[in-house]
Structures are given as structure tokens and as C-alpha cells.
Image (tube, each protein chain N blue to C red):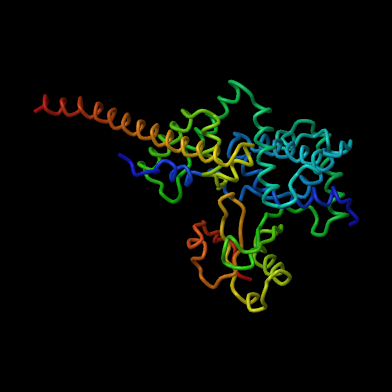
Length: 163
Length: 192
């Protein structure tokens, strides 16, 4: 006889999406926005077609246009960023803001965010810990405790280093 | 940048919720391109109905989960959908639950996936919303458009059904292993 809810706990652990798969591309935002507006530019190109190689010329034109727009309009160009939620304290109930950051710069991006949102200045010097929320999104908490993720019942995301 | 109110709000919701929606779609799709298309379609719905989307960030995410759920359901109906679900779960069964990569863990994962496949689609969805998206019964109620009470009951029943089928799978595997072991033991005796 298995433990009560063993199956459900196993299901939770078997969550198949890793945060590495959740990059947000600014090109994709522009393609979606253009599609939503009914614009003729990258609209007719399905995002899957970008992968499968269909409509090569259309993709090249659409992506080229979208990249040009991104490079001209947005700071930081069309590079892929990862979505991160920066918390003001080591609690899931704390105030938080969603930002986009490049890999390797997640902690510094959240620290910059904390400069504007932290309730007290003393929080600004506290080390930041990166965890993975149940939804798969990364979350950054100010805490000197390396095991804060485990305390919050979250997985740690160890590949980011303190700057 | 001088964005209109609707466009500014759309961008904010996109930036904030794209990863969670992509994760939702990837958990239910066999192909990343297909998942990205579903997310793009969900955001097109958001653009058209931007005035109906909740203003609170988290409520907006729940609203978007409801949209993408319908988008995925509309994109693949009937048998084709069942085949894709089966294929996705077959892939998931190959994953290692956490760091525990033992033969027993793999066997348990495969039993769990068989149990999931035996659930009806609404039961499976309510379970996955809780276990994979980490939603509570009241949040699931918003996604599914039902009362909190109904969502809590559905979740409770789905967990019970999953456990029952999983235990049945366990028992049936144990029985098969015994049957496989018995002829081997008889063979050893006859040699002696």
C-alpha cells in the first residue's frame, strides 16, 4: 500500500518544464504584437515555421524586419532574456516585480530593481538567492541564508552567481 | 516610448506572463513550436479582449491560463488530441522525478503516467493545474470558470482517482513480477 498522496507528490516532482526553456524573446513579443494588430509584417509567419524551416523567405524577411525594429527601438537589442520575479523579502507573500534579465545577470538585475522597490536600505546589501517557482519562473529573494529556497519549498537555481 | 494605454498594458502582461504561459503549453505539447504558437494565439486573444482582462497581475495570469487552455483544446481535438496527450506523457515518463534516478523511480514515474492517462481529461487538467502550475482550488476555479467549491471537490476527487489507479498499477506490476519470478524458481528446482 502506498503512502497517502504518494502519487500526487510524485506528479509534482515530475513537472516536465525547466526554467531554461522559458526564455522570453523580444522578437517573439514583436511578432505576437504585430500578429495581434493584424499588421502585414511578421504576422503571417507562424512561430513554429521559424523552427521547421517553412516559408524560408517569408521568415527571413519577417525576422529581419522584427530584429531591425528591436535593435532600433529597444535597448539591449534582440537578445534572449529570462523572466524573473524579484521579491523585496524572503517570502512568497512579499511585494515583487517581474523583470527580464540576461543569463548571468539575473542577480544584478534584481539588485537594481530592489534599489527602487526595497522598503528599507538595509535590504540592499543582503545577498540574493535564486529559486524556481512552481510555475517554472525564476524568483530572487534577498536572504543571507543559502537554503532559503528549501525553506520556501522551492527548488534552488544554482547556476547564477553573486556579482 | 509613447505607447497607447492598451499597447502598454499588453506589453506589461506579455513580459510578466509569457514564461508561465509557455511553461503551461510546453507541459501539454509534444513540440516547442506548437507550444509557442498556442501562447501567441492566447496573446492575440488578450489583445482583442484587453479591456476584459483583469487589472491585477496574478488574476490576469489566471485569466490567461483559461484562455490558453481553450486555445490548446481548440487546436487539437478528438483522437488526435488523445494521441498527443499519450505521446507527451510517454515523454514525461522518461523524465527523472527530481534527483532520484533509480530503476524504481523510473518504474513509479511510468506507473504514474499510466494512471494519469487513465483519468478523464477534466480530472487530469485540474490535477495538473494544482501540481504543475501550483494553483490553489480558488485559483483553479477562476481558470476553469467554476465555483471555488466545485473546483475543490473536483481536485479532491481527481487526487483520489489518481491514487486509486496508481495503486492498482502498483499491485498489477507486483503481481506480474511474481508471475515472472515463479517459472524461474520452478526451473531452478527442476535442475536440482
